[in-house]
Image 1 (cartoon, rainbow, N blue to C red):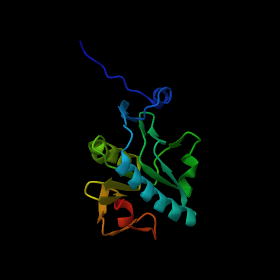
Image 2 (tube, rainbow, N blue to C red):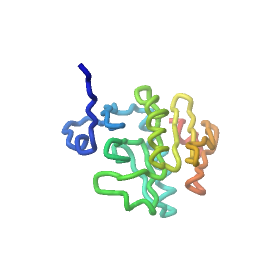
Image 3 (cartoon, helix red, strand yellow):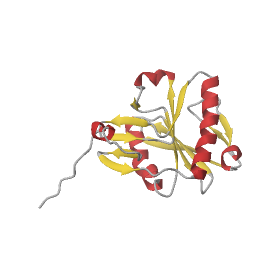
Image 4 (tube, helix red, strand yellow):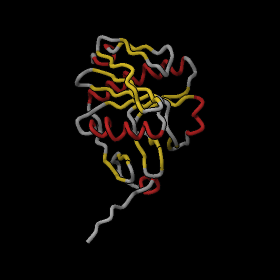
Length: 182
């Protein structure tokens, strides 16, 4: 007997009525466990620095998980941090973002590391996320990739003693000691 996989859609996903966090990738549902202390402090410190810069320069908004980014009817993700420029604010609804943010930041954890680095990276590239950061708490690094015609290109890998610079957010600089020292 042949088994057929049922592909879920955003409507199926939105109709779920429990307190768990999920992502929908290619119609398949993945549970996303709550992040740990180190993950949360890194998310807070990165997010606050990013938000202060974006707000001061009136560039758009910064949002944090859990928040649905609906890339398609079968691809719904909850990146750790997203930046949406003023030009893309028309994609925002009360419940979600319907399209690709300008910037996505994923903070790796043991349970989501492979999905973040491979599957979600491919999705972000496919749907046009301009800049993608992968934060590795264990190595204390931030890899910044920008979208080119051929896919993502790494423009920098920043370590704890470095000052991170974003190609997308001109003028944004962040001493990574402020992020990784807690």
